[in-house]
Length: 219
Image 1 (spheres, rainbow, N blue to C red):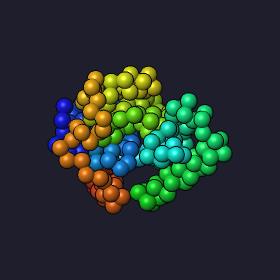
Image 2 (image 1 turned 90 degrees about the vertical axis):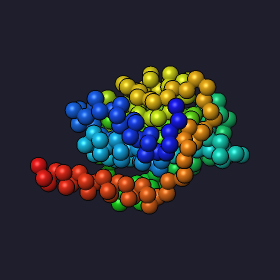
Image 3 (image 1 turned 120 degrees about the horizontal axis):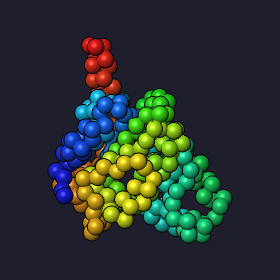
C-alpha cells in the first residue's frame, strides 16, 4: 500500500480508528512526522493531542546506526548484544544527553507543558511508519509507565516481524500495511515524504488545541 503524503496516510488511519472515539482516547504522536498524522487522528476522534518523545542512541563508531532508543520516562530498549559491547560510562552519558534533548524538545514543542494524563485511559500512539521499531517500542514502554487502561499503536506501515513483537507489548495494533517484504525505509511507502520541521510540529499542536477550545466553549 502506498500513500500520497502524510496527510493522506493520516486520513486513512483515522478511518480505522473511529471505533475508539467513544472511549475518549488520548492521542500521543511521535515527533516529528507522526504529529502530522496524529493531528488528523485527534481531530477526527475529537481527542486531545500530546507527544511521546523518544530518542535514538547511535553506535559510538557509527552514530547513524541506532543500537537503542529511550523515552522521556521509560527505560532503555535496544539490541542487547550491541548494548553489552559498548562502554557503560559512555552509554550512561548518552542516556542522560538524550533525556535532556527529549526534555528540550518538549519545551520547544509544548512550551514545557506537562504530559497529558493517560492513567486509566486509552492511549493511541501514532507515527508515520515503523522501520526497526526501536523508537516505537521505547514510546510504548514510556507510556506504559503512566498506567493507561490500554495502549493502541496506529501506523500506516510496519514490517511484519516488528508487528509480531509490538503486538505482544500493546493491547491493539492498527496498521494499514503489515509488510512481509519491507522496502527498507518508511519513505519508500510515500510519494511525498519531506522532513517535518519543528515549526510545523508547533503549528499543528497549537492549531489542534485552538479547535478543541472552540468546540468545548460552544458546548
